[in-house]
Image (cartoon, rainbow, N blue to C red):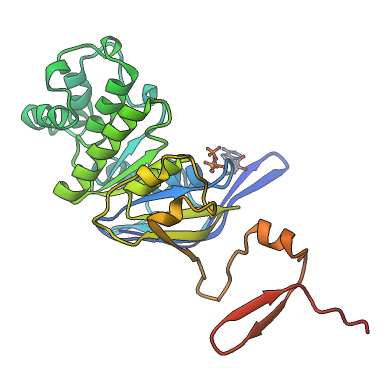
Length: 297
Ligand SMILES: Nc1ncnc2c1ncn2[C@@H]1O[C@H](COP(=O)(O)OP(=O)(O)OP(=O)(O)O)[C@@H](O)[C@H]1O
């Protein structure tokens, strides 16, 4: 579904350049439900905005289904955004029109593509548990309910890919669980590919694969050991990546790119006082990286 190879995004303003993505590689299979995690400023939103067609890549390769997002024309981008991809933001104000009812909000993107299907709009609201609230105006709904309307809206045009930027960032734990349950059902029953950007490691246990981004590059991957295991509780103690929490459900792998580059966590480098060079040995089974051997003596 998604292929990024050496994806670069540079933001330029006056004389300042920020390299937000510096050659990122990512592959997401059709029908996968995965999460992207990373510290603030690591490039998560930049990546999601590029995949959503909201921002243009600077270089490299990025494709979603049949679309090459580097070469896509402005005109094609309109239909890509309308038909292929659905987007959910943390702040649902970007998705919703407050003076319309929940149902009218879901019908709005259908109107824009002249394919209004009231029965489907109602079905979507039922799916997200708002059957009894569909005729309420948005301002009569709670924040969590509005976020569920936003999910229904993002699905209005039957996208194949759903992108969610911190979808549970502003709701309580119960609503967050509900939203993740909706995602899982959409993924399993409709086969929609789902990519979730999050700071929240408790979400990680609910997806098949977690990719960590560091400094604009994919650094580590966590793959669920048992894909049928759909919980969670083990991660509920706020344990961080690397602190053991995520490892109870997922196996951790370091990402190695096509030319053999990988990122070594800063904490490891600091612990061994490795700065600009290291020694590397291969013993037939393992590759061992250690502080550079002193040439003196
Ligand atoms: N429009 C922009 N103009 C200039 N720099 C930008 C722009 N958008 C993002 N950046 C910079 O690009 C880098 C990556 O930002 P991005 O928003 O993708 O990070 P993030 O991982 O989503 O962070 P957060 O979790 O805080 O949202 C940051 O250094 C950021 O300051």
